[in-house]
Image (cartoon, rainbow, N blue to C red):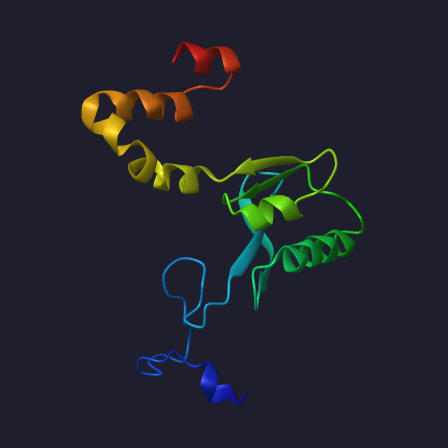
Length: 142
């Protein structure tokens, strides 16, 4: 493949980047960022990958390769979208696997629109449950 084939199709516009709509390039290559937290509790990018496909084997390979690059240290927490393939690929023992809040909230209109329309205060109360609680007891009370 020649180098100029990787330019953005519309203008081969700007030679800088081709990011279009979230985490996929114009060529539908999933972008997988690895973020960590530094000693100041700030999120930092510590690595990334571009995939050709989104198979379970590819994600498993990436996670094994990442663990190897981290000298065998397993992550304590992994946050992903709710993709079934990724969920099956995350198999680290003693690692908490969480779903990304942004992806969860993005699906609220699709799955709960009937509730949002029926109860005027639903969005406020639901947001309080998600963002205003830190313990199971607070969550249940909200």
